[in-house]
Image (cartoon, rainbow, N blue to C red; front, side, top):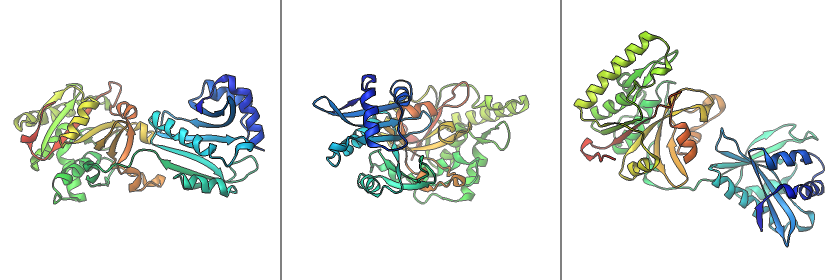
Length: 370
């Protein structure tokens, strides 16, 4: 059977560690810390009360990636499938923790272990030189854990923002093109939308797009829109210090809000719950959701995502930003799975936790209030 390790297993785990490894061993002190204080989970395999193997997982608040820190089976039971069972249990535990992928480092000179993990669905993605105590390199491997879905939302086309301040227009373009394939997908349209929808300043640099501006731009192009805000306060006004800028933001937003009223665009001053977000997707809407980018990029700036689908564990979203400086490609931004708890934490911005969702639909008359 496989169960969670306990502090009472400490001596047995250390003994097993010494049997299995010549170097890079986890010490008694490290085991105790990892069992009691760290953001980790150790699972053990037992047979008739005898501990014969373990797998140790590490988790991070900042990412949706789990890491297999160590896995070992007693020499007398190796090649009997216990390691596979432990890895499968680690993957299940990672899913329960809301993680979307799992990683492991394997010695570069350990070809059998590499082949085993490749058979289990892990893909090598980088080499790390001088990783182990004996200076051997490591092969980093990763496996996606989220289910491969084929919902209609996964047909939403992807558009990468071409400027650092055009995430909102890029997200809106994705939603509009899903409903109308002939809708223009170009940098010209991206900039046109940005000019129409910009309502906010940042502490420095060029301003960004607010929910009213995005909704109005969508309606002008024949789509329906609906806005959810958790506060009637001027959107992201705390992001600037200048009183002059705050005054401009308030005036622009007031004007756009009045235009929304004339266009009969509903504005709800209450947050959209996860259940209502799911219901909106089921009814055919594409939500544009404001997030704080800290959870993804470790930088605090407001950012728009296009939500394309949702299941019991994850929200799936297209992120228009591709960080090419860090080697990212479209694959890193396409249909990103975000655990529900992580999504709820990131879908707010600033000290006051302002929240904003713009629902885009084919026609205004199709809007169903929720």
